[in-house]
Image 1: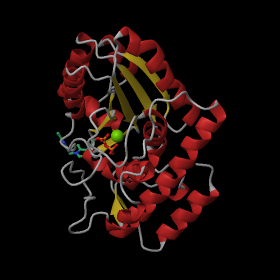
Image 2 (image 1 turned 60 degrees about the vertical axis):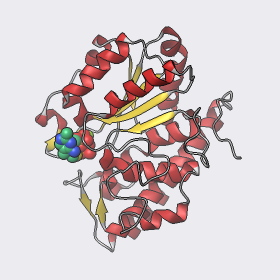
Image 3 (image 1 turned 180 degrees about the horizontal axis):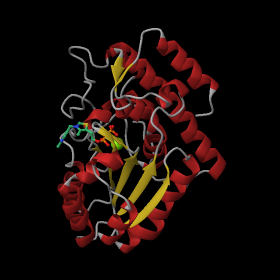
Length: 290
Ligand SMILES: Cc1ncc(C[n+]2csc(CCOP(=O)(O)OP(=O)(O)O)c2C)c(N)n1
Ligand SMILES: [Mg+2]
């Protein structure tokens, strides 16, 4: 059996970052290829968070890609079901989903529906999408794993829109109360929601202060800076986990990152992309440095 990502000592920092960056670039290409199948989708977010998910899947998670129910695996809970396309790209990169299967994205009978369904997709731990629930489930899962004596870690991925939800803050306080040092949240602070810019829908800043007040080890980084992401996850593991503090990494990302045509789209929450634009998107990705 192939064993990927057992917690091994990291390679030298440059090699480690280069591996993550290369994975993120392949994931962005997967996202464009899947998006083209439907001609539309949550493509901008997925391009924006490719670096975050690459750090998680290439560097952090302890997984066996061909045994998605391995009890000792680290858990990754995607709270934002509409980001499923980003997770499929990561699962393909991790080897849990065959790359060729990405062509079925969103089609009838596919294991890869446009909104995430855990019962369909190997490696997808929960059906997110009813927003504001991922952290609550993660807290319960982290408590359950501790109860079982497992040393598995729990990661959950939230969006900035989910910081509007009361359930997020209840579970944030619960995680600190229960000293869940093996729980890490990563938040896509892309400054956007379905109804417009985040600061016009609900002001959530200063977000760091709110997480810190709830008792979390809190860091804020450029979510498209791989070195900064790696340093943040290292600090969480070294400084917070042994002290029993849950960690959050607030990641400021750029929608459409790596594809200038999409970085500047007005309607970015759900993108419709013309048939002749996909090739241009791929070319821009290939020419860029992301
Ligand atoms: C509980 C709940 N309320 C509303 C929605 C509808 N909805 C789907 S995506 C979305 C935007 C949420 O913000 P965010 O995830 O930050 O948006 P994005 O960054 O993807 O534009 C909303 C309100 C939902 N899925 N669940
Ligand atoms: Mg958002």
